Image 1 (tube, rainbow, N blue to C red):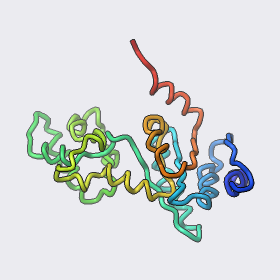
Image 2 (image 1 turned 120 degrees about the vertical axis):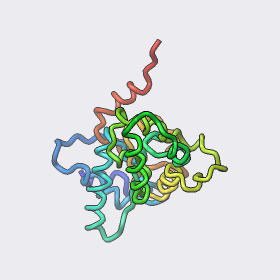
Image 3 (image 1 turned 90 degrees about the vertical axis):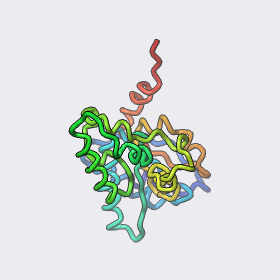
Length: 218
């Protein structure tokens, strides 16, 4: 599998790369099997976009597969997870609500958790807090709505986590997203200077996700 992937993309001057469909059983290490050959193919000018079916698989790639490769490869590869805007904290919203009381006894504790977490996080990804959003309405109020809604005059504009992660993505070798993110943000990848490699993991879930995200209800 590794050889098939590498040979398909390694010499574009002598043959055109073909779209590949690979089926492999669970548990054989296919994540490592596709990440290793792409490690020798990617560059900052031409990254690989990996789309998975769940945010857990994103975490697995970022925190298990990529570090394992970096231990063995003679060079280092960089990676970043990109998620939808609502996964990230909006610092300006949080600052404005920090001293605003509400009727929930849980909110002061959640605010304290977030303050401590902000001293450690490098991503601003609210998923790191492992909070049940359905039971923690305060989190809804501080979720990011997207960079296009940011005001450059706001005090936290330069420190905004979503902007920071999008900047890092421009320098990363591996950009790890989920199917929903890819479907909703395909235009971002289309506008990159060079067309990236695209790898869709768990492809059986991709069609279902695409249908779900494009349904219209009357």
